[in-house]
Image 1 (tube, rainbow, N blue to C red):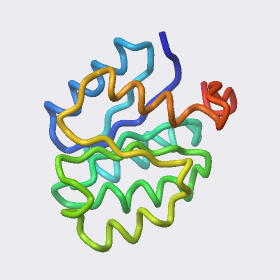
Image 2 (image 1 turned 120 degrees about the vertical axis):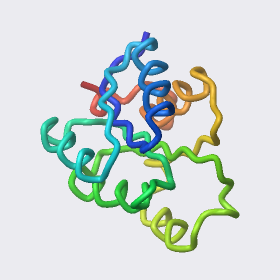
Image 3 (image 1 turned 135 degrees about the horizontal axis):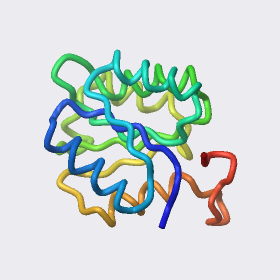
Image 4 (image 1 turned 60 degrees about the vertical axis):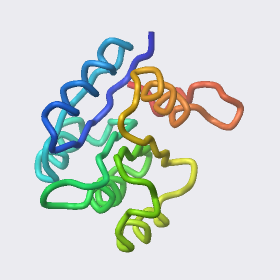
Length: 140
């Protein structure tokens, strides 16, 4: 079993519920958000101590990449797993430019649809240091 909090940002209720279920089944605490406002509120409530954000790239009224960059400015240790049904070639240019602002060791990408194992493996990878050990400073 894994542990730690994961903030999930997705405006699709079904994807949000399934992602949350996958994470809870694997021992993570899932905090779900459907908008930029709710994501900032959740990060504030956690006093910035959320190690991972799972963010949909394309939200109905916003960019998940933009929100992730802004959240990381408030919590510099935040790691981000971007999820999307689109490949990088289909992303808008502003999102690709924003993605470059994040350090390579602080971001991963997972294509929708994904399995629970793929999701958890990517999160564990983000939480691991270069030697493959879990980084205790990023956990609850």
